[in-house]
Amino acid sequence: MKRIYLKPVAGRACPDPDKGGALLPDKGADVPHTVYWQRRISAGDAVLAEPEDVPLVETPPVKKGGAKAAAAASAGGEQ
Image (tube, rainbow, N blue to C red; front, side, top):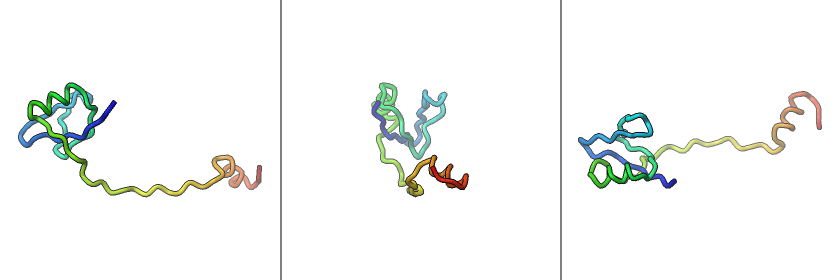
């Protein structure tokens, strides 16, 4: 399903049915593009937005050889 990023309009509350009615945060959230959220946009309760810049987290490089090589190295032998 397509997803969209929405922010509530100032002074308006947007309950999120997928989160038990918790309100859409002021900073916005990624939500499924459903009839419910389309109605919130049409009613002026929420607007399409861009997510705030989130710092990228570097992932460590993956070593070749996989789990078998790691297990063999820790056991002190080769396979």
